[in-house]
Image 1: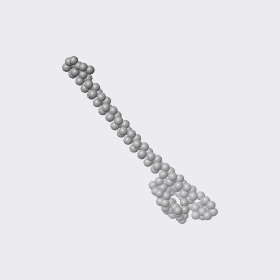
Image 2: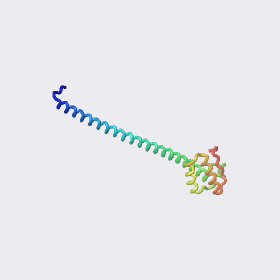
Image 3: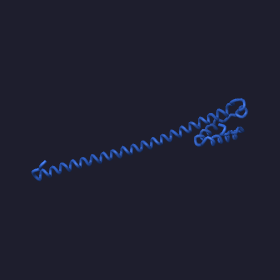
Image 4: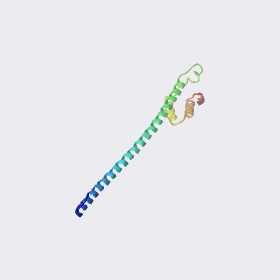
Length: 133
């Protein structure tokens, strides 16, 4: 394209400068949107990790509660001839809540020790051996 006058050249330079400014604004806006998307993605990943941790913790607590419920059942109901005298005692319901809380925070052998301690406090003499279960 040929320009005949200086005025036409100045107008073309001005037009090109305006296009460059607009393109720069669009590029900056796109970068800002990209950063916002990345920040939101990061927040969502953090929430996902927190929910996964909560799920794992809740799952572990549920598994421990099931195990404690089984122990409670075994302690309160005689199972078979050999266990009838030793397991015929009753475990207080409040003790079960303590066991569930302890089991959610502890590993299996610690739970067995808690059961044993509660039974001893209630006057029962059953010894819980984690290796047998």
